[in-house]
Length: 92
Image (cartoon, rainbow, N blue to C red; front, side):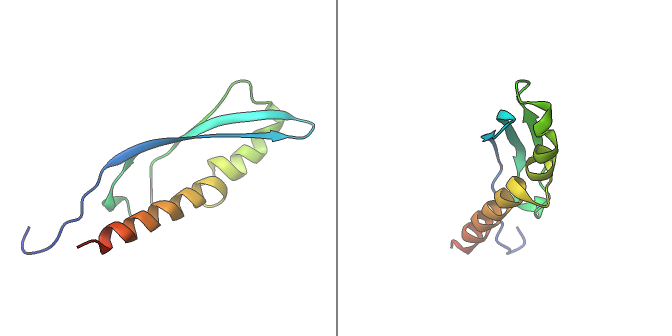
């Protein structure tokens, strides 16, 4: 369009997570990314689901390392998405 290259992709994915906390028990759930596109610019919509069997005592850690977009799991996922975007944009 107007002599400019446009790099388009549009995908969604879900990542299941699980860990076992000593003295608390098994914890599991998923992080869903319903819409990843080039115009997100690092700000991705996410939905975090926690399995009902996950102990309440683990919720603080889940909030800090799974639900938080600035650290933990979501930050690591964002880095991987950015790496993909960089590689994708480098294609000619």
